[in-house]
Length: 234
Image 1 (cartoon, helix red, strand yellow):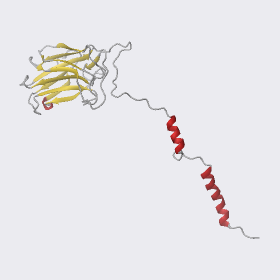
Image 2 (tube, rainbow, N blue to C red):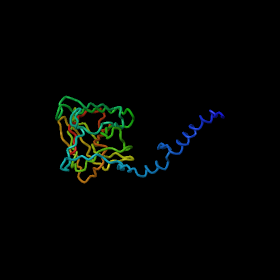
Image 3 (cartoon, rainbow, N blue to C red):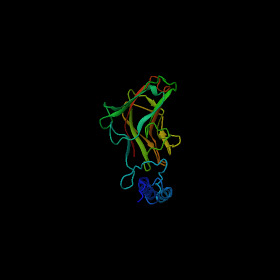
Image 4 (spheres, helix red, strand yellow):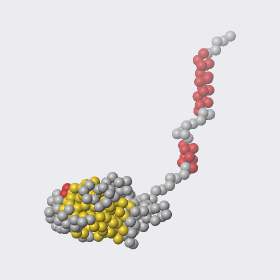
């Protein structure tokens, strides 16, 4: 009787195993390009997000909800960020929790402008923006449709301080504000006084620049200090 070749006996099951894996074993999804393409076709496309869409400010009944830019220091009702320092920004100082003689609540905003022309502009101001530092380079802001006016309380440290312009909106760029409205010049007294910016007929569907003021060195050669409180869209 001839001896069986041990090498052949060892190789046979190995060959069968290779054939079984190659022809019958399930392939991973990464190997099945046809199935992967089919699964992509069947996937529901993502819902497109409108470019520049802004959160809507409404009450449950659909009416406009009073919307604060500043209510009180650290208030959850505050919106926008006073991040847009302009012109001679080195001449500016600000405190958002000034506790002496607020108009309402426990604090107001103290703003000081030295008029030293640190950057050589001869003017300075601050924009309250959403998101912070947004000069129209990104989508942001709020849909303030339904607001009739923007009101704020303001007073000067000595009286006679002059602010050239106070406004809402006006940010330009790739994602510009939908409109702009403002008043000015405004000359202050030492007493709190409320002012209103009329928003009638304005497109408020996307406002990234919620509040802005600008003052000049020519009108305030010795600088000035003034106070803001209860800045609100109504």
